[in-house]
Image (cartoon, rainbow, N blue to C red):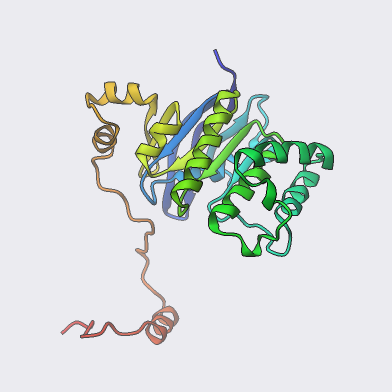
Length: 273
């Protein structure tokens, strides 16, 4: 049985009165390529931030295999956020090397690992260029190389192909598949079911802050009695999606004045008659 690398144990996350995640239990095992699937606002990014130690759970725990809290061992994780956060005045290699040095990786080791993956991403010739002029696809590839340079145990990807052209998206998917073939472990957040089915050997469906299903694509079809993953998803998420923000508290007099001052009227009338 594959070793469990990362474990989410009854984890919940609240922001004031808003429940972003509710009692999530999830084990990430070595060799898993997990498609974390859900609509916008479902809780995917919040879960990724718990897994990466950016957020602490309001209740429950997120632990590594040695029972240490993930927040104290983030060096074992590689993270590609939706916003790549590259330094525009540095070259791609300088961005990657800076990250490697933070993790105590020598320049020689960092270069060997970077050049290996850069060849697969068709990025080797671009490593000496400043990232300021990079396209979104080039920035995303650089962020992937940065996340892989310290040989993480688990790679966390937040919408890694969002906004990419067809060729760049396909290259990223091929790299993820390669990592899986080499025994790597990846959590791949996406709202594209077809993409998750092509890339991942395990699908986790999250809806309204809850894990609704966890298994292989074939197991999800069997569980729901459907013949297509999209039908399975609809069956498991039939209740209405929650709004992303709750605003039930009345505005103070100052807030009401400020909002009225800077909120333009809707053309054609927007006031009650």
